[in-house]
Length: 386
Image 1 (tube, one colour):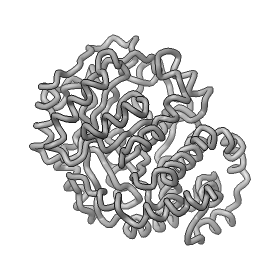
Image 2: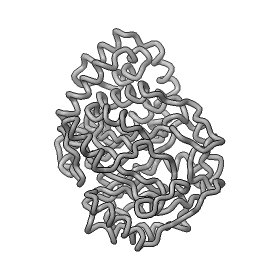
Image 3: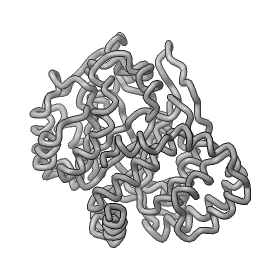
Image 4: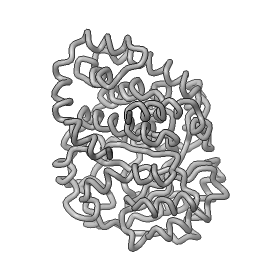
């Protein structure tokens, strides 16, 4: 069964409604379970669980130390282009916005990457808008081939591709793919994607499966928090992450929590997410999926990121620029969104050390790629198929 089939069959609206009836006793029972199931996850995302954030946090702290140790992987995005053919209502790259459009040449990409390598980064996330006529797969392959010898890990955050083209990306040196569904609620999705290739909900939804089949060893998902009810999104994210971990057990699955904070003037998020809700969502996902990586970007302010270091986060971006050419030639007026944490990568690394953790600049989860956790998910998938 595809994830689309699973999502349709799961009836997320019904599951979301059931959360309103969860009792404190049910939350306590979920916290007492040594291996929580999906029903326990639902209890931990319920309104009743809001009063249990402290015991949830302690459980998450211990669980994360056990599974990941005291390490935080640092990465940074490198924007190749802000050209886009979509009209996403929330995005700074919306084709109707009057911003300076820019696409880096191969030499300019290499120069930006060399600057980031000098700082210490060994993990880059290559990002572009959805304009395949401007940034075709062939150009992305050129970039990967040019950078692969200098960076242990190269990930992509680009428009959805077919399985065969994803396979070409892995052959060229890409080992990770991040792709947010934005929102898993179809009506909300249609509302904020009025035109462009991105209107195809199902093509986007199936992209991580195509990437997994093509051999990517890191698969990253997320919902753009604020577009729809966060509890609905949390349920869908948990289903999606668990599906990927079962079916692509050789890959490391990560979940990101991008939260809409600064949006174009004409757009207001339908369901803003406060700090407490963000924390509850992250804690519940960590308890249910102890082997998933949790990613927190510079969309969030420094104080919140620092407090979440010991609460399930395994990867953090640092020193991010969200516009093409932004490291050597900063220009916020052509960026995708405003960054909240303006600290330098070195300052972020120091904050991680002060919290008692070790910042890692290169790809550390290759060991996880070969860990017994993946064998556990292989067995779970086999059991589910039998």
